[in-house]
Length: 318
Image (cartoon, rainbow, N blue to C red; front, side, top):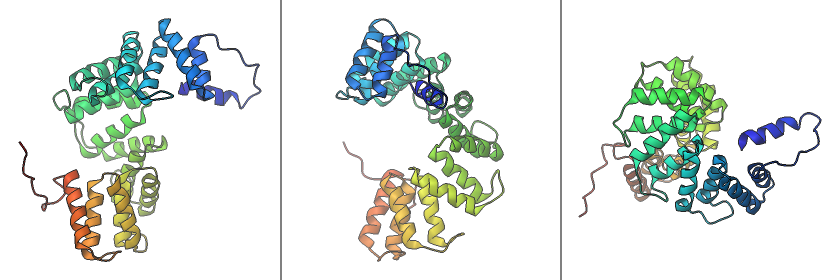
């Protein structure tokens, strides 16, 4: 559907030929969705699916999975994804894999998710390759294997999946599954950042700040962190907070650091919560408040028990 929209936008730059009436239920569904007529889109995709068109079944699955004009119902989405995947639609195999990985609408089954992502990747879906790499990297449903993860991230990146480029960059930056190669990581992050992947932009900022794989450039790092933080990357908010707290390349501004750490902590970043606790403990950029400092320290430990030696194992339940 995204390709169809892009084609329409490109055509709008030239004199437009007379609009052709949609010739298939699937095309009628696409046009209905584009004009916001979700009921008609659902009916047209249903007709396409009933006629054996796999992509119509996938679109129906997405409608029920995401609740587009209907109540979200992953269990109802699953059979449509199955029909589409069995019909050779790689994206549907990936979508079905997500349900199995997360246990939404079907029992959680990482091994089944692995199989579905592998099928999607073999069909040619770049997202399936990326998700398969994640399972191998983190050992979900399969033994941890960073080298195999790298191979699947490479396939995803080569097919235009910017998240695959980001994940591959992390492996090259840290030498996991591949020989450490910061310049290669720099290239991959740059490519993904150009596709507006906020995490990639944050990681690129780290390379500019530390001078790994590229000449150190604090101003460029700050720019990347600022944009990535605005786009929702907590790591960027934390790193930018450190810069403002200590005045590294900018005038020191602990109050701004406090706001940045707060944003990161609220997004679930352990380091953001930890640093926020330090500011409240020491009264940096805010009035000292030990109770709030302890609260943020506890939140950090809950998010990541390795964040501080002060984190203590909690008693187990029955």
